[in-house]
Image 1 (cartoon, one colour):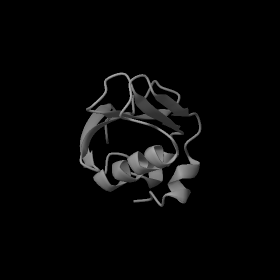
Image 2 (cartoon, helix red, strand yellow; image 1 turned 135 degrees about the vertical axis):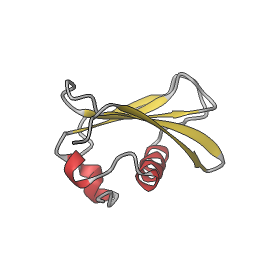
Image 3 (cartoon, rainbow, N blue to C red; image 1 turned 90 degrees about the horizontal axis):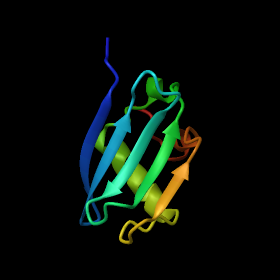
Length: 102
C-alpha cells in the first residue's frame, strides 16, 4: 500500500531549476501540485487535482512535471518576477489535455 505524503521533485526546464511540490496527504480534500522557480521564492503556480486523478496519473513523474511547468508558463505564469501567483482550482482537465496518463 502506497503512503501518500508531500514529495518534492526538482526539474530543469528551459535552463531554469523548478521545484514541484506534490502534496498527497490523505486528510486533504484534493491533491495539490505547486511549482516554484529557483529564481524567485514568492512566485508559484498551484494546480488542485481530485483524488481520482491519482489512479491514472503519476504526478511525480519527471515528464508529467515538465508538461505542467510548460503549461503554466504558456498560460501566463511569469516565474521570473516576484509575487506572481496563479491557481487552477480544478485541474483534472489537464490529464486529458496534456496526456498525463501513466
